[in-house]
Image 1 (cartoon, rainbow, N blue to C red):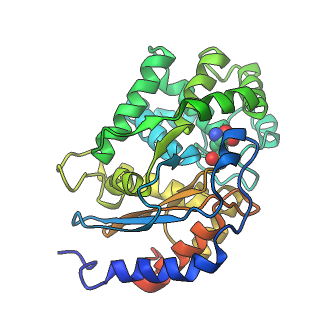
Image 2 (spheres, rainbow, N blue to C red):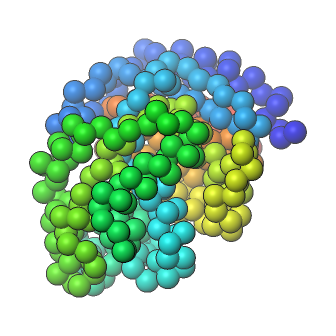
Length: 314
Ligand code: GLN
């Protein structure tokens, strides 16, 4: 029995929901991807899935939203499975200290992105997953992986969001072309971006996302099935990367306030991992100045305070 049993997690979620209620709509919904700007800014959902298999949820926890950069945790997991530690020849493991879509540091570092969670890094990861496959195969593989992890076939890619990203993704196209100019991409830019835009456009609910992240809270194993998704060491390392880089140049602030490995997306979602205890997903579309969900971060801070789950101590 894990030490989540003594907590009344449903009342914790209910209290968080009541506390954020008057603040719903805070922050700024991402509008550089036009399809994301159409989302109701007042949406709010949150779900906790414990390693004992209990599920708690509140608000819009069953409404699918665009997971965006949260997908980068899962593409990194797949790429590590294919390439192992050699992957780190292509991508660094240091916080970038700049915006998620920044290009500046790439020039100084020969086209090698700082970490797998900034856009440049995730585009490189898409390039790595493409090895020996067509974009269509790889997109299918990523989607199947998400369905398997969440144990839910009802997960899909939102074609409107993927199209919207492709139509307006000038910055991502610049990043990919820039890296290609350094000889750092093995596949055509259009193929790499096709994979990247599609995995960012996966739509999932908070409950599905928390289920999908549970292996990271459970030493790499899926508690329900007992399947080993990654080794214990790899789960620990992915968590370390989420803690240091998962919120871009807001990662320090997130560690300070929440203290959990977590990954945000511009759709307003955050997936967080409480090792040995639970995986959590929260969704609120309004973003703070670093492009991370404003109320989502507030909600996770309240959760960490109430549960004592911060990895830095209760
Ligand atoms: N698809 C988004 C982009 O490329 C992902 C960014 C994010 O979620 N931070 O800009």
